Structures are given as C-alpha cells and as structure tokens.
Length: 165
Image (cartoon, rainbow, N blue to C red; front, side, top):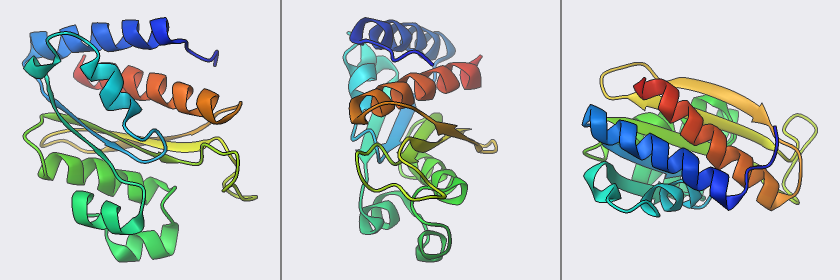
C-alpha cells in the first residue's frame, strides 16, 4: 500500500463523511496506535458534527478497560494488539457512545515495541455497526511510525466506507 498523504486522507474522510450524513449514521472512533488521528481526519471536515459522535484514544490497559470495556483477561491472554482486543474495543465504543457505526485500531507503530510474532507495523482494525457483528482484520504495514499510522488511518476509513455501503 502506498503511504497516503494529507490530501488523500482528507479526500477519504470527506467522501466518508458525506456517506455517513446521507445514511444518517454517526461514527465513534476507538484508537490506540493512531492517537486520535482517525478522529482528527474526520473532524477536519466542515460539518462533521452532523455525523461524528466522539473519539477515544486509549493506550494503556487501564484506559482500554475503563473507556471501552476491554476485559482484563483479554489483555492478559491475547495482549493489546490482537483480534480479541480490537473486537472488544469496537464493541465498547458503540456501548459508550450514541454512534451507529464504530472503528477501533490497536497496533505497533514503532519504532520499538515489536516482537517476533507481532513485529512493528502489525495493526488490528475492527469495524462494527450497532446491532451487528464486529469485523476485524490484521494488517502488516511497512515504513516508519508516521507511515504505519497513515496507512492505518486510511485503512480504517476505507473499512468504515465498506461497512456503511
């Protein structure tokens, strides 16, 4: 995947925002490795209050548990960067918001923090519609911290677009 620049991220967010508005959907974000960048991309669009509910940046285990309802056992057994954790994050984001659709991300943006089984660039993204089942996908992005985060934001936005279409 090519590393998206600011213009490309804005175009993705703008198109998604229009579809959210047209569908009368509201979105919530739950972000770990992107630190609120998905929410920033969405709220950079004028009129986003018509379809953006809220965003949560939760890095620590404690924040994931308190803000998003991630179970301690999930974190202990599978770790923060896992399918199980991102599913609980995206579900918890919907429970704790007024949104109709959610996206959650957790990963290792680097430059440190990676391991043999979860190298830098490993990112889990989850999407869910209220009342539906969560979908999660693992990505292995290349590049430095900024590149990993940009690719994560773009993939999160594209996945939301797929969810609402």
